[in-house]
Length: 345
Image (cartoon, one colour):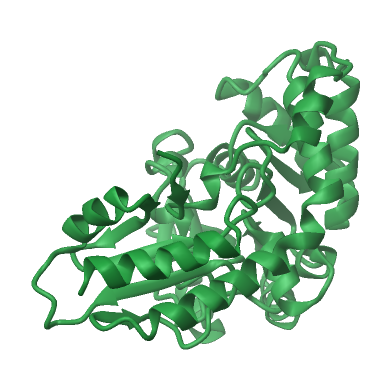
């Protein structure tokens, strides 16, 4: 059976153009800095983020790990949201591998951190306390409904941080979705932060990889850390070739996914037994839950949907996340609405 797979935009497969680019990629040994395709990807990515340098890494998790450790020493503290991907879903890597302590602040409904909360979390110069070194933001924000942060907000946090000699790292896994939703250039969202990582393997459809961007000195540190965690991938230009196609052809079409997310939400809103998490999806994610009158649990509903050819992400005992991407068309949206109606009748 061919499924309509809405579990995540990480399930996207490379496009025919990407497969062709991968087959024809010119490669070299990247650990020696000799892979021309990786070098081109890194330069392209850095330019799109408005940074001096870029570093190709295996995943967003590796990008955030290396990104944080390049800013922090062992025993330093990073301020992060309590719903941040870095805190929830990256195996505690910054603490386990880097000895970096985290201070978790409550994320606001839009995924932001309140400046007042950040200010109150900054440690005093006291030998009892870890040293506050870094603030981490996320854009778009996964657990807060795929919401986005504005250039103005990021600029305020950066100005606040830099005035206190703190760094700002942006987990921009889906930064191009955030840019599309606001009709701004991604560079505007990354302009004032010290480092940013974004994924090629989510809505941009590349099979593997993320890019970490920052100053030349910062990326020099990150390169050593990438080596330390086993991220030297040798002739990985085969992968970088798909990333180049992703940046050149996929970033401008993400508004199509957002439009389909709105259409999907509109249709599901009319299905008895479903409660939408947001009136209008902010980007490409639709969050919903089961009405209290529905006796089935989310896992049971997901299993029944699978029999109808629909795969969804279960995020709780009675809740779901549906993610739109390049491989979901209008027919898939209609099939999903029809399947939910059938399963919950």
